Image (cartoon, rainbow, N blue to C red; front, side, top):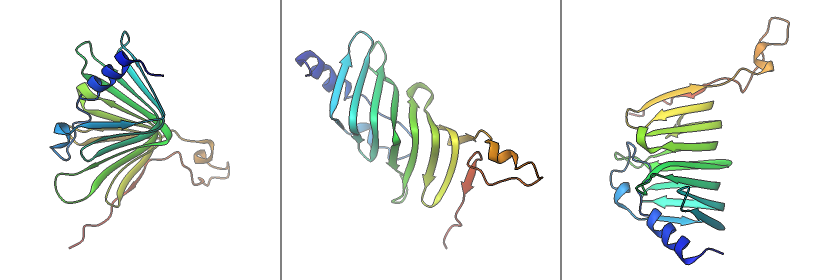
Length: 180
């Protein structure tokens, strides 16, 4: 059961701006709605945890996961958001056109101070039909810079007979041609 002070804190914390990225500029001005099966706020540690089919929506931003944890600064501003799931997902509509930027991974971290999204384990960042897949993707949303890395697996090293095997331990990029 959530106490009245905790509910008040949840309401206050929900007014914090999420994920300022190169996307719909009006998202940060929209209210935040959060749905979950369970929620707990820790005032002293400045953490709020949501569990059970969590859905966070602000404007065109939508984050889903099994668990979403929000970390706040001493001034009650969001400093970090972590979503975990099978997979955790993120999407946000772009300013131009009707396309959504999409991301997924077992863990999604967003660091507000550096405008950095980190996708971990089975990570994928996509827009339209183009996408990047890797074990870990670091996306600087302010500068639109992506760093993707994967760890080689035993299969990637080959069978010992001089032939490399197909492996998931590689960065994969799909770039679709632009339609004219």
